[in-house]
Amino acid sequence: MTVSQTGPATPDTGQAPPMISLRGVDKYFGDLHVLDHIDLEIPRGQVVVVLGPSGSGKSTLCRTINRLEPIDAGEIRVDGTVLPSEGKELARLRTDVGMVFQSFNLFAHKTILENVTLAPIKVRKKDKAEARANAEQLLARVGIAEQKDKYPAQLSGGQQQRVAIARSLAMEPKVMLFDEPTSALDPEMVNEVLDVMVSLAKEGMTMVVVTHEMGFARKAADRVVFMADGAVVEDTDPESFFTAPSSDRAKDFLGKILGH
Ligand SMILES: Nc1ncnc2c1ncn2[C@@H]1O[C@H](COP(=O)(O)OP(=O)(O)OP(=O)(O)O)[C@@H](O)[C@H]1O
Ligand SMILES: [Mg+2]
Image 1 (cartoon, helix red, strand yellow):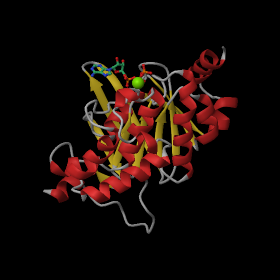
Image 2 (cartoon, rainbow, N blue to C red):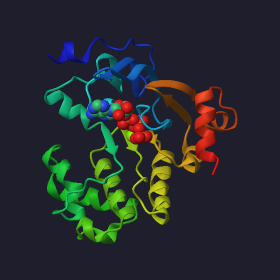
Image 3 (tube, rainbow, N blue to C red):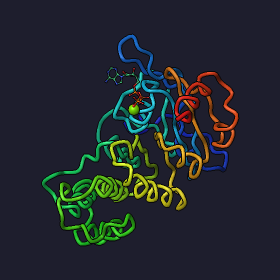
Image 4 (cartoon, rainbow, N blue to C red):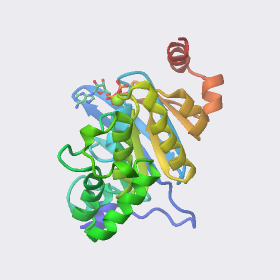
């Protein structure tokens, strides 16, 4: 029953719904309250950097938006539609949300081009030639067109992560989630990945980015969401967050990361 799964329609105010909306989202792992009543609305085209100490729930937040993790209470909408918890409709709607992880998770036995065309052909039932042409364009956009016939192990970490981004984009997502996309990279490769993310942001992609790269947060974020113990503690613009954090938790966090 598609109708009951998608819930009541967003009231027609004549405006587009937020691209991502979480209302009263709770999640537990056993006794641990890992997401504590999260309310978050992210408009179309906004770039949100999520910061917070280890274990504060940043990865879990991303995974629930993508329905890799079920929630215990509340509601999550992407572009106005509630994601069902399972079934075919979930598989289709999940492709609206692209996700890039710290580990690139490329298919080792497929070429770079095959990595990017696989899901569009299998899931989106795209014509092979069209999927190829699109993949070549995306690989050019992330600066690795000439690597398309290689295998993942023949690429540097930064190049592999750019393939992972191209692969997500090939599904034409409405939203991109990044969970520490540069944390596994050697320092000299971080910028080549961040540059791709900055250009994606400029092109108007709605993005949620968990990162320790404060330069990216200052330069590319429209908004900083600071989490502690599963709750959103601060939600403000980057300038205010970095220069005048209001909570002790955020001051403590910033002191630790900016202190050296
Ligand atoms: N599958 C799981 N089962 C049980 N507990 C989990 C599971 N995944 C995460 N947790 C716990 O939930 C809390 C939030 O974890 P999460 O990975 O979301 O934090 P994080 O903010 O991403 O941390 P980090 O900065 O270290 O990546 C942590 O206490 C973690 O140990
Ligand atoms: Mg994490």
